[in-house]
Length: 383
Image 1 (spheres, rainbow, N blue to C red):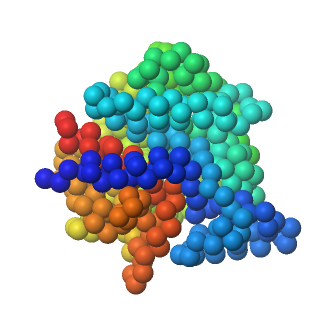
Image 2 (tube, one colour):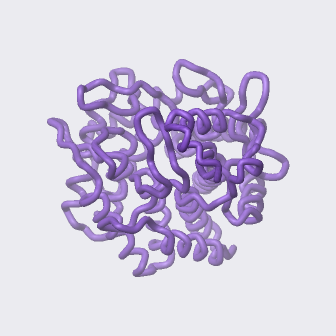
């Protein structure tokens, strides 16, 4: 059987050499060229073009490599996991550095610690400023800080985690439904994004495990109930639902997010509910059969096959390695990814299209997620 530690070690050396800084598919608006001055549509077009451009012209646009809070949270999570797995090795310097960066660089002005992406983001109907907090970034940072607290027993980390709980419960809009509740993605308005709401639930479930405050558990389970009520008969989830009850159809790596979050909420709240287990089983079967080929190659967004997306690959490894039934397939996905998408320098490519490969080494989207995936797989193989 393949030892993935060699691939992980090559990746570790790369990200440490880069000091965990890098480019991002969505960082175009960090350019000193103020695209928005020419209208929001110009900003949207610039962002979308650059995301697809396989030639890295960011230095020409004045875009610098930066820390991305979500990437730092994923790296912190993984290094803490590796330290527990390999106590003979010493990752203390990396762990303390990542925690300190997150502790010192959060978004101010809210009821608790929170984080956002390190770039402006534009779409046809909204413009979100750099570091505007959202639950997805905040939750993955919280996962890292949770592992840091469990490893180091640092009381400051617990204080930050409880403060994140305040952000979730006081700053994020919460929509009540007949079947449960949904936490909004950002503080900027009401939306009902399934995976984002479950990430909020996961943070609250971890806080329940640490504090035994029943209110955390109650909120977490209500959020799970709502998302489970939106699972389709074949096992898949769409991305979100609007106020008129219309769903946004987008089936990709977020299927894995949803599966993992439901399982984690069950674990941290010590909950054994049959409908949760059934939802996970149906969702994972769909994920395996419909979203991956037998050789471990993921499909992009159903029904589209290309591009082969590194985030789809990494999430497949993470989700499948968590269960005995799919453990071997997690290795199949990892084999495909290492063989086809890891550069000899250690980093992973962004996308593999039908006739060429987009090789820009994005730190958050590609390296942080593959670092986490290979860490999880290494741990799973040790069990």
